[in-house]
Image (cartoon, rainbow, N blue to C red):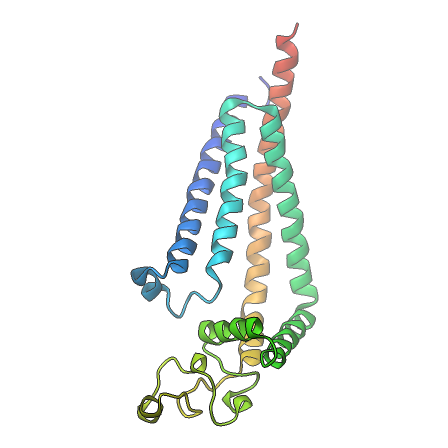
Amino acid sequence: MGCGTSFVKYVLFFFNLMVALFGLAVIGVGVAVLLKWSVLTDLLRGHLTVAPWVFIVIGAVMFVIAFFGCCGAIRESHCMVVTYAIFLLVIIIAQVVLAVLMFTYGESIKNALVQSVNALFDKRATDTSVEAVFSNIEMQLNCCGKNSPYDYGVAPPKSCCPHMGVIGSTINQCTVIDANKNGCATVVGDLYERWNKPIAGIAIGVACVEIVGALFALCLANSIRNMDRRSRY
């Protein structure tokens, strides 16, 4: 059979098996953090600054795509292998577009993120759901207010105070002395500026690996189709 079908099939199977296991591990991290598993949250404290649902969604997407790749390869299913290749091509296009946007419009994206944080802060007083979201941002990113804790006056919320000092503990109220000093808009902008180019570079690198996987999948799909045609005659 063309393209070394057996070799391609097993390479594709084991590659996607590893991806599926990694996807399950990512889901496990998200679920553990969501359930506040103390051992894991203590280990990741200060490093995990994204919502656990992001981990769960990313892990689930990885597992589903890898499932199509594994089953399609081992069962020699033309439909599943083609579906897997289409999934990969869509993700490749999305990653390349994201990387290009991050490289080209990095400053504009940063400004948009800062403005979004500022808009959330301005809406928190009139919307309790927005207030909860902003409080979560403050706790996750160790920040306070838009620009500083003084955005709240002299009594910032407890989400601004990971550790309260003697005065705060005595009056059971977060104070500007104990509150995180950096505003959330500044922290978000700095985080984006620090990580936008590494993330874009990783996206391009992963896309290159995925292109190889897509080529293997299309090669296997073509071999399966040719084998089916020959079996009919």
